[in-house]
Length: 108
Image 1 (cartoon, rainbow, N blue to C red):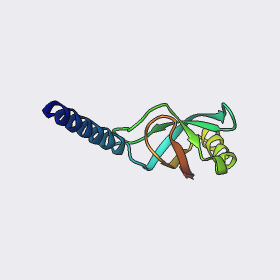
Image 2: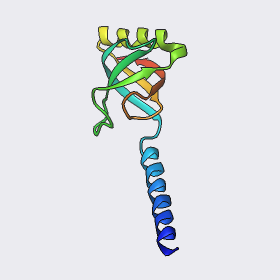
Image 3: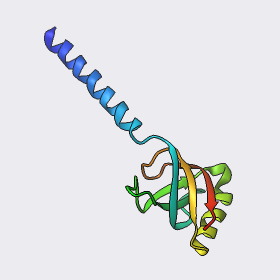
């Protein structure tokens, strides 16, 4: 019985650690450089971004544009690349292939 309680306790503790690890990659606003952009697998639009912060959270990582606004976000990304502009993005997580929920051009 004691071994069973110890096992259950360990499972609960490890589960809590996994939850906290996911929370470490929380959503937020980032100023980024667009490295690549285009249509990809299926009907998704993929945009490769690099955080421009002094200590970047990510570099050269792919993100997925929100499906309901993928054409608009692709247009913003291509405009940023063409004019050497940065973008301000709100992403669901800084992990690769997370969803871009908003994207704005930043004037130079």
